[in-house]
Length: 523
Ligand code: FAD
Image (cartoon, rainbow, N blue to C red; front, side, top):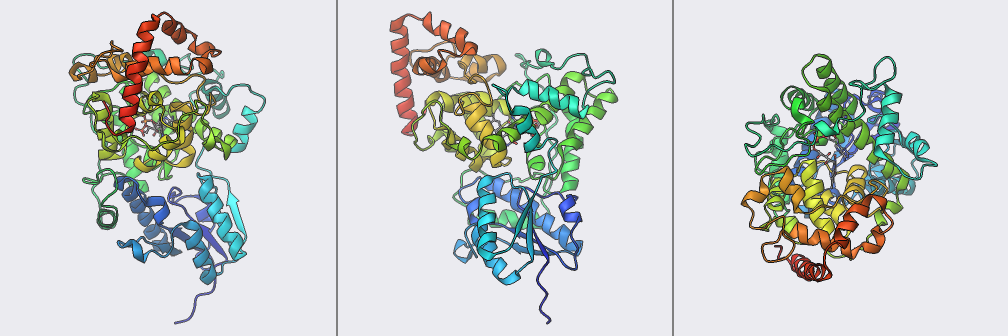
């Protein structure tokens, strides 16, 4: 058989770059160019099996589609037996393949993980092949324009950035340049709990039955990653663009109308509530944030969803999602090293791997993480993130833990959310004050506390809610750091109102709770 000539352009497609309509792909000429993709040990080991299955299934579907288009795809599959791996990470595999494929040039869309970008650059340099890194068109803003917005500002406030983007894009703006609905923010309509009667029946997110490609992946993951934390049964995530579009349509018609109202609520045994569960499809680029925003805005226009829901959803995508990406590229590579509260570097406590605790809120959120590789935003921020922050978990460990367990975690989005928003490890870049609260927050927003053996109102005694005890201890521990923070002043004054003996008793109990939790005996 004749040997095929080396590709002119070898286009690298990473596992989170799976848009079949991407301009970079469209520009390829099947007679001269080729694609390169790889499943690697380094990106999958010790991760939640559902996360691995989701990425691999989406990647293989993408590969098959490109091959059907006539493109050559040099694709490395992970074997069931790790001893048969061709290489450990992108750098090793790419270097090997460049030696045989000898392309004229390499092209890649800017990776969402600087570590991966470094690996590709190293491999290209070793092989002497030029690597061109192109901007990622799957975001509404660019890192350069974020940097422009951020430069000269003392604080980077989401609300300011979000309004600037609304004005620039015209999203949810009227002809006079005013926000549709007359307000920028509908938060006061959007902080409702379900009340005693609970949420009633909420339509579950759409499920997708695995086809042969996905079933093969599930079998591989079950064999190769049998010891990884988390469960894989009933895999049902969207892994193709068509499925992602169907998931979006389902969200818009079934759950968007009440998305805003119950955005901050929690309810035991209800992992998705009115959330979209679109983050995986969005982050691997099966669907574009503009499509999601357009669909929500269209629902508003048709009277199918109210403004508080649509603005709330747009705020997440146009506001938070773009904002955290801007923060990532503006602050890396040193951002990942930040540890503003000087937390000790020690492994994540066992409760974050097995969910073993009597705290109903934490146990419920962990059961969702282990079952689905997912927890909704309030579980991430005000339950698991809060618990970790109050315990003094190291912010980078919290990020690494998150990267391992969540299907939607990619460095650019996980890092600012975990280390920054949730753990305040960045000292106030993403949020001007830490998200810290007593168990009363969980009590107000959920039904967890009614059946819990801990009392959110108590901070000392065997039945005191650990979140409450740890909250007061956290404030006392970081009194110096927060002393000058105006937004923490009220919380600090409340601490100062407590008699010194009570604070001592709280701190003693907190010390025991923290020690036991890190020893694997969570309350
Ligand atoms: P919905 O509640 O339906 O929201 C719609 C969409 O808005 C999401 O799909 C997501 O794309 C976007 N969005 C909402 N909030 C954020 C945010 N803070 N940052 C970026 N995008 C946002 N999101 C990730 O995609 N990957 C992560 O690794 C990730 N890590 C997080 C870690 C912590 C500690 C916290 C507090 C939040 C994290 N988030 C992350 C943000 C948010 O919690 C998830 O996007 C959301 O829970 C995903 O579920 P959903 O698709 O049902 O979201």
